[in-house]
Length: 146
Image (cartoon, rainbow, N blue to C red):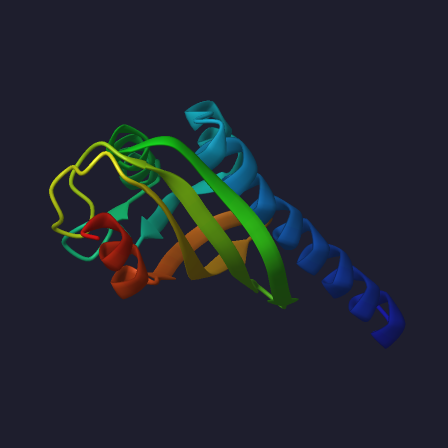
């Protein structure tokens, strides 16, 4: 494979990863389509957002999304930007909804909130193998306890 062909293949893989990352937020988080996880998450993937350092496999992702959608009524995740290179995509996104369950240790408040988050997602063969998220905990907690 020539250098040009390799560069084109890498660019295509990077764009596929970017598309899969967007699908995670649009279809799984916002729409609650857990069935999509079978298509976009590798069997051995880790979700660092799950307590205790992340569960292996899709079960961890199911646990994460199930909790999120029960704790935050009408949750939506809006991707505002992505940066992709090689096997990694950094996603800038906004989460919005009404708190109905415990979030970051705060008891249910019934308050609407919005917060920015940054996630790093690593891919292999177009599937998520590692997920980490850094939410604006302070900003969200300030809104929930106002």
